[in-house]
Length: 144
Image 1 (cartoon, rainbow, N blue to C red):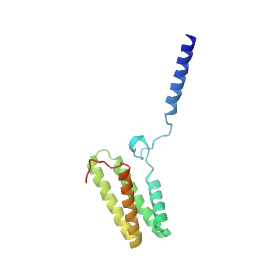
Image 2: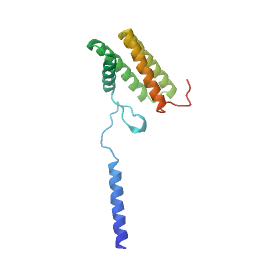
Image 3: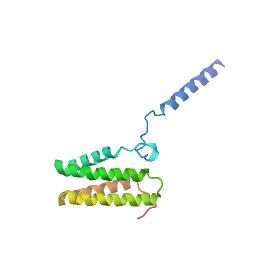
Image 4: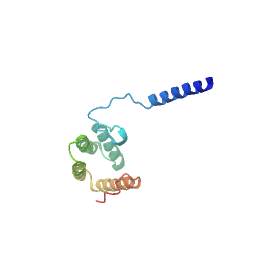
């Protein structure tokens, strides 16, 4: 009997500890839209910095071109963030707006980058698209 009580107390302590270990105390910023699975998305400035740094490295951009890419990426990230947090519009309308935003970013890259850099940028984009598809990130029922 004493063993059963000890075992029950031990299980309650372990269960309580596991429950507290799963909670988070980090506040969620109102201007950060929630991604799937409850994770936070980075703010638009962070997203733009990452994209500009990655493109500068891959495309060997000079500082002036990198700044132009950063400005375009920031504009895109801010628009995407606002679009994703706008729950009053339908998912289809948000997807159309994001597609238009992406097309606008591509157009700005075409005018900012050299022909060779833009070609490599398009190849990078296509490779990322293929990798996303391979990981199953695409909606298999959406054959557009």
